[in-house]
Image (tube, rainbow, N blue to C red):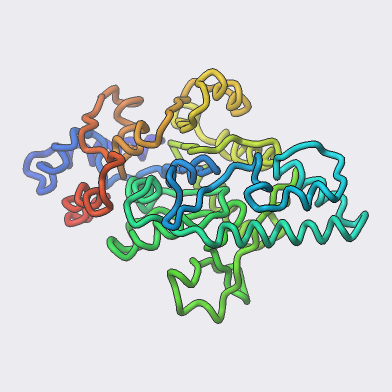
Length: 364
């Protein structure tokens, strides 16, 4: 926060804490000292495969369950077919197998044909997913973020988009975070004559004729994020968000070796932020010691916390105002009331009712 921002912050603080201010009663009930109408730094949430597994622990609407990369070929029904190719690697991990197929596709047509087979199987597998009728972690996550924030996902499945669409119908897109698809998504579509990105025809039936399906960036070791315009645009947007973000949260993302370039890109952008103005949260079921070792590549972990569940994080405890929480706790040494948070039993309507008073006053 520079000098000008600080003066604006102090001015806004005095205004909001004035009992004569019309918004004071609601504002004060949330026990926060950082005014909502000041410049809010974005909160970025990065989703990995574990996030979808947490969002639908019992499967999607029709019982389909997500899968991690290990054993995924068995889920696709391709294990015997891949074994018949005589690959050099001895692994059941899709990333390892896919990388060899990709590297050897010019060596023999059977490897290029296998690539096409795997690509189509992956796309078809994820295209069949449908979000359950009840509220999921994805619904709660979207509602916990505001229009300044971004959700960047490495996942191919459409569940985050389906949750986004049904919430957009209730509260409007202008209150929702931006969605970024870092490896493409089966629910993303791209305009044929340009790089404009939209959501799939399930959300926008008027886009079927002028948009194509998004390409999926498959798990090869040496990924190129600049070859597909839509994926390139998502990475450029993420870089811009990281330049000003104060909180970066990873949910269910294991940072696999095949994502080494992605991790490096995120790290470089994150390192441009002031050290005292950035916080990393990791949501993962792995032991804390293991997570600290895995994420040490980000450098100093002075501002680093781990959680077993999304519902334990400040995002859920302080929905749509996690930056305010961060500023109060770490800058102003004020500890806040967590009783206005989102819990896993809440319906979408109940979660929305938390913020209705602020939306009526054009806040959050």
